[in-house]
Image 1 (cartoon, rainbow, N blue to C red):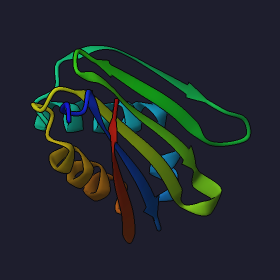
Image 2: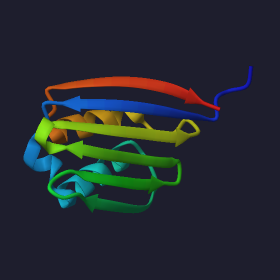
Image 3: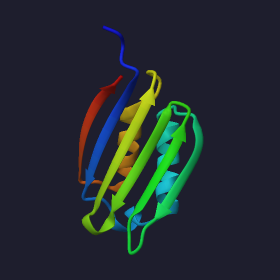
Length: 114
């Protein structure tokens, strides 16, 4: 069997700081630092704030991407970490985001792609 082409980690973060979940600048800084800590190569990023609340953001990395979608009114964030190859440290990214969002609980699932 051939090796997988990519890894995809799905994070469900509960009990997060609602103010942080609605602060695109803070979320951007958090995700960029998480990617650095996971040894990712940042290409670009885009973050969008919804009305009345919530943020979606993507950090495009040479290895693929890290994305966040937030529901401040529920203290919830969904994060995708997608990477080709084996150099990106998904656990380091997960741990930095969990701490930064002050999540009470994180559920994590990892899929192999390809």
